Image 1 (tube, rainbow, N blue to C red):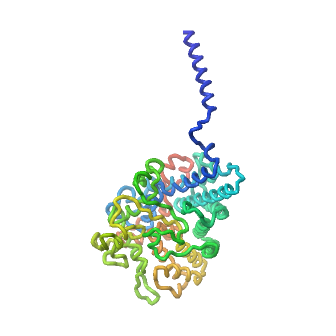
Image 2: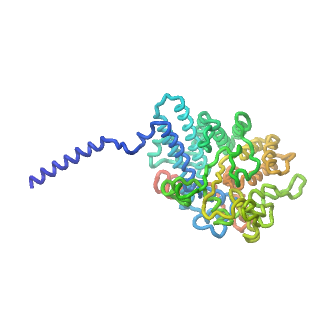
Image 3: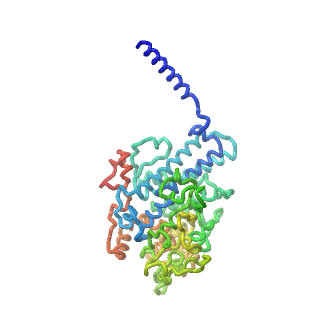
Length: 522
């Protein structure tokens, strides 16, 4: 027995000695946070990884467009729509709604990645001129992406946990902070980003990265949401003067059907055509972005919305009707942008009556495929050149901020500052691109506001802008209820719907945050 104890003691000492020796040895065959970030190449790769949450669940691979097109009533449900997505157009979503949980989490995943990269950049010691420039640029990219995440979080959820450095992510019970503090942080981040970001990139492989112009545009938008109209107008004005060369594309089709690289795009989420299993799973949009999704970067929007494919949603009657209004002579007028936005049988309400205009087997009539009265999305679809998809493989980039949006936001800032005449040429410039008549006057502030809001509804339909516009204008409840009452006889929006619910999973994981939630909602 004694001999057994001695052998046991010797064996345990051997394990202790071996364990200490193993702990002192670095694994030379793999990287960690302390060994990877030592070169420009490593930081370039890390900077690319900051963008990937834009394709995560809740974001532009799938849920983002459903959430905000349905809540903003740009889209309405069609019979194939299933699951908790059905809650969104009826405003019956809850703290357990999966899509909203995904969105909340992906925003914070992007915040974490940006804070992680910024932290590593601060510890990168280099005197090489090109490395110093790269360090500044990537810091600016990170500050923009973090600010974009917080812009979505604060506008959708109000008070939220604010994590401005890597160490903040290790605090499990982070409290919510007032919206004003979040807005201040966003402004500071974007101001710093503007100073660091380039006007453009010389390498074609960097197309889609954040630029100085994108940060300026987002800062202007941030000011606009806070009703800082003078500051907003000043930021937007910068983008129409040298050294910036933004311009409206020749046609909406250039961005939403042909996916050309135009000077109108200020910031967009990049997508690439799915070319086979070598780049990952075509259905990664349902999850697995960090695993079996591989390198796939397509968006499922075209497949989900397309009338010859899954056809989960229709264009709402509110959007369709917005394209018909009175001209300055009081005569009913159909805006030509309708034909670039939706398909309709026989061109009803101004929609496009045909598809497959460039297909090998010839032009097809939209009315042969649908029930009478159903309008389907043309924007972000490839039906001008193909009959259907068969799988989600759209490569059309998702526009986040484009120049037409900036011009209309600048016009809004002028109108809200009661400088109506200054808004007139901006609105007419956007209208001229599509051949719409030119206004000779916008009238008084009230009339000008009505015109501007209709312009945004038409120009940006299906781009997830409407919901955020209605929130900014403070008219979400009255507008959606009126539209739903006219369409299906319900008024679903309550006062508490002005903010999205804090996800239940987040509340369960963070008791401090949970204690700040009222009425089991926000």
